[in-house]
Image (tube, rainbow, N blue to C red; front, top):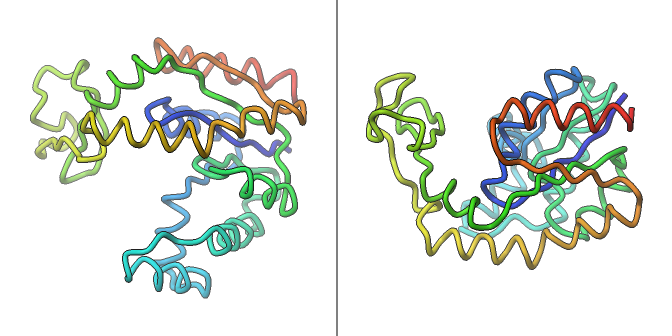
Length: 210
């Protein structure tokens, strides 16, 4: 059984790496985005609570997000562990997770900020299949290599927005590194270079924690 949390700044590759690690460890990869979509789509009681805030254009409060995580971790597929990506984002959320089902290990994907900026400004999303691509790896930066749809440069990936997102990360989420370091649960893994090499490095580092 392995209960994992992935930390990292925007653009660190949490989603990409979490998917591969979860598959290798045979535990569910739970991203906050997917969790919210499922709760809203299934109209669960906590999903309806979240929808009430979202419909008004307000941020979903911690209490509702924590309730959603609690609900998700009680599902049968989490009996052998979980990999959380995007939660916790704050110390308060981390303290709540410790009460629900504390992680065994926390992987912090470490990337220099100049590389993060390059990754995020060079990221494009397909308007059709929603795939995400780095333009540096594409022969045609306007067309999705998977479905042929149009690639879009999201507002979230514009330089000014990225700077704001990184500022929020440094203020709210970066303190979690110290929080989990104090619990002796933190693994720092450089997330630079070939994604498969990074994936292998994470799995190797986790072997000592299993």
